[in-house]
Image (tube, rainbow, N blue to C red; front, side, top):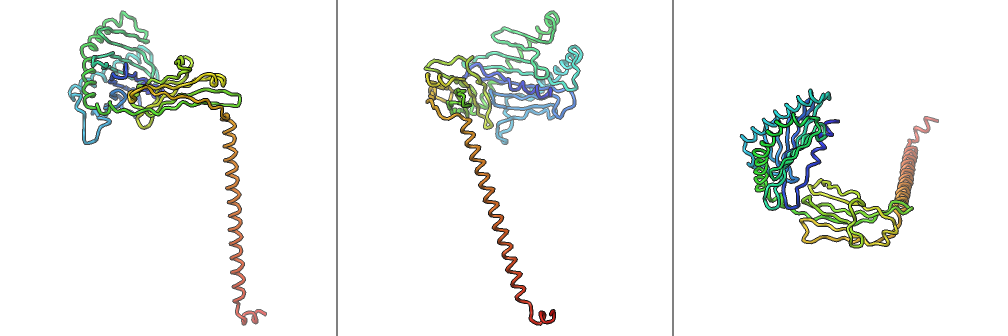
Length: 361
């Protein structure tokens, strides 16, 4: 169960700072204990595209999202990769000893995860660098670096005095080694995968009126789906004014099976509010030249409960009719079989020889 919770960290990848910026994320997992998974593995993601995968069993960086005959992207030097993976693997083992003995971790399976993200801004300048460490799916410490400034937070109950020397070394490594390498790798992948990154798919947008019961619980839902890339601005307007976020629900970005995304926002309303005001769903996306406005025409149609009742009744009636027709068919078929048997028996009796009848008598 702990391992499943740990995997939720993968879903918390931060979006790039703005629609024109790009990010490179390394999601690393270390597992101590008996599981069918590799002890150490990581995935590299360019924006939301998985570009490569590595684990300690194969010790090979496998490209993802490219043609088989294309082979490796050639972005990461093999010797450099070996140095990085060896260091990270050893670092996770050191953290394991700290977690086990200093934090008194007693679970049979220990799952550590590390998220490293660097960002390239719209103007091709390096943006923020973020590193998060998690145990069992819960973030325990976080380091951020941008414009030569560091911030560090931890929930490990370690004193600042004990952390001081360690942090000084860590900050130097990040500023002079990890951060430049991450930005260089990000630029390399952008050059190789630009056609994938620049893919644009327009969203399909609907503004739906909801009515759940006879008592009149109403609302509207703005749904945008099938768009790529993931950056989208979706807003519900009432009489030309944006509805504040605290009055709406939803707004989560969700993936579709085809690699596109969807988002929906809900606004709960009374029937009087639906009649009194006009509602619009406005969407801004990189695939659109201008903002897309979808207007809602108030429809006082029947509530969904009576409609569902009618549908269910129709289905039941259809099933009954099919059952009756089947029974009639079965009876006719049975009667026909009996009739054939009766005529056959009569014919056989008529064909009995006269001599046999005399002998029987």
